[in-house]
Length: 324
Image 1 (cartoon, rainbow, N blue to C red):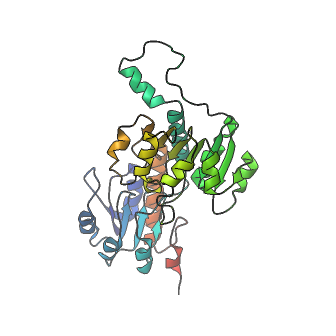
Image 2: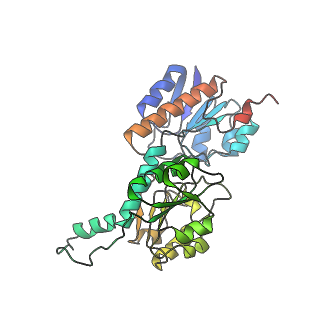
Image 3: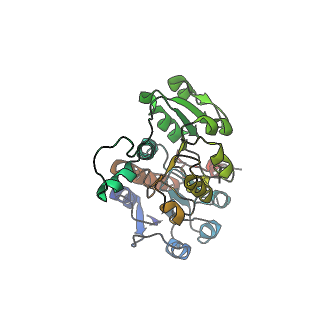
């Protein structure tokens, strides 16, 4: 049986599947492990099942000559040094598709929460400040017939945009290639970032974190946006310059923001946490019972397939299987 290390407890269905083929060692602590702890636990293991909170860098990857496969319990994989893994001919897999709809739904939840000031209103009411209906109390914005901007029209961006259908929205999107689904279903228009930011009432980020997308939304971009604009981020925190966002929210360059991810996660800018015009969630984009269970099963299956020397359909560095 293969020896594998799981960096944090995942839903039991995934562990049960792993145990059919592997001797499984699971981090007994309900916390993120340090690099030294990961290296120590990875010793003599052939497989690693890790989370997006684990930094699997070159040092970790080269620490164990027996390591044969890495399975990431996430759709994104910017936490793993893919180049180092590829050098060692170690396949790396992720869990795409299963969390697409769930994350898109969370993005909409954030959009509604910010637009209609739901969290702010809840706090206001719980504090005993509600004195009855008033014409100017907690005025938010309409969603219907507004312009929706999608930055990154991949799986999640597409799912998010399609859910706008009932609101009769104009949809703009940025992407490396045309999205025929959005253009056919929503009459969406592919455009550049500047045009999207200038015209969209609501902007939702759905791009992976790469050197090109780090601080994609900075002070310059925030100043382009409409005064009534709302920014939603369920992708990766560092896509936004958090200091610039604080400045934009404080000075009311934009109406508000809804965030599920943070630049220096799990740390959050203290100034950001003081603001009423931002809704903050604890990275729960895929956090439903159904989705997290599917992710666990997929991550386990990916690891088993890779350990057997076969190529998983979710392998992100398929070149490791090249004979050259």
